[in-house]
Image 1 (cartoon, protein in one colour):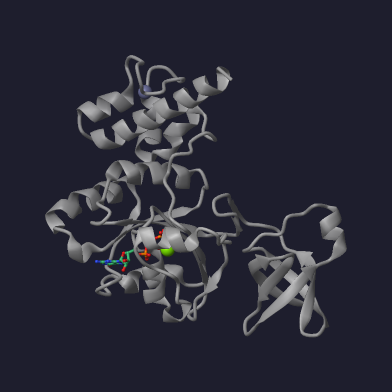
Image 2: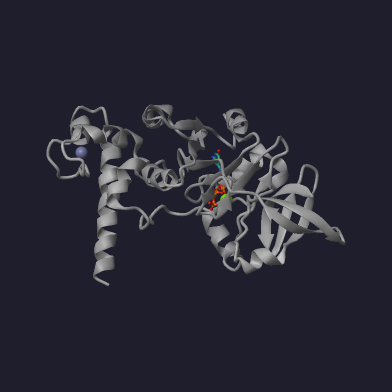
Amino acid sequence: MLRGVVIRAYNSYYYVQTDDKVTMCTLRGRFKKERYSLLVGDEVEYDFSGHQKGIIEQILPRRSMLKRPMVANVDQVILTFAAVSPDLNPVLIDRFLVLAELSNLNIIICINKIELANSDDLSPIIELYRQIGYSVAAISAKNILGLDNLQNLLYNKITVFAGPSGVGKSTILNALEPGLKLVTGEVSNKIKRGKHTTRFAQLLPLSGGGFVVDTPGFSATDFADIAEKDLMYCFPEIAKLTPDCKYNTCLHFKEPQCAVKQAVIEKSISEQRYNSYIQILEDIKQNKRGFNNG
Ligand SMILES: Nc1nc2c(ncn2[C@@H]2O[C@H](COP(=O)(O)OP(=O)(O)OP(=O)(O)O)[C@@H](O)[C@H]2O)c(=O)[nH]1
Ligand SMILES: [Mg+2]
Ligand SMILES: [Zn+2]
């Protein structure tokens, strides 16, 4: 049997990549009976069934599963933003970070289009996220700045590029791997073009080893899956201080003797980050109320 990775799923065919080729495979009937949903990113073993086609006999255990997009065995998420056009908005970064933190995957922040930015505006934002512990890559896909470092991070891993629309995700991937020829361009044109085409997540092989997943831009607004008491764990610097609060149920909101609020006063936690936390906490409360009211 041959071992490979499912890179694309379409019309009940699975395209399985081995070292040197891609084979179109179907799934052995018993998996269908078990209603097992095979995902892009899954590792499988297959045999040839004639006519160059394969049949998947084994599915290897999953290491991880990302919900949006639905991809198995992702190693890391690169949250991509633009320094300018659309302008960098730290509140938006925080909202994307929360959704990414829920996945338990390694997170890298990438800021693109830096050739358009004033470095005095950009540096404090980059510094803030580095201090919290995130890796931040500042790049320009257009001027080929900082791409080497990014490329090194992708080696032999499955990496998802996610973020708002128009920040340059597809442009970055084309610059890293010119053979990909991903569609890029102005948002308005793309909406017209993409209206009647559904996009499926697929793994794009890198010639140096590893895979990337390009995703269409989205807005980070859906916090319905998060419980109020869990939100703080999506903010590493807030989570770290939580044991120092007087009440172990402290949400760092209106409770007295809160170590997090004290840290904001002392400026060891950024006020912007704290405000993002409170904003999302209120979104979650609002959601819950909406739900209870039917
Ligand atoms: N100035 C500048 N423009 C860039 C850079 N990278 C991408 N762009 C432009 O930004 C626009 C959007 O780029 P895309 O790659 O389509 O953006 P995307 O993130 O894939 O957008 P969606 O697919 O809608 O999510 C295009 O017009 C690109 O040419 C850059 O480094 N500098
Ligand atoms: Mg794109
Ligand atoms: Zn507290």
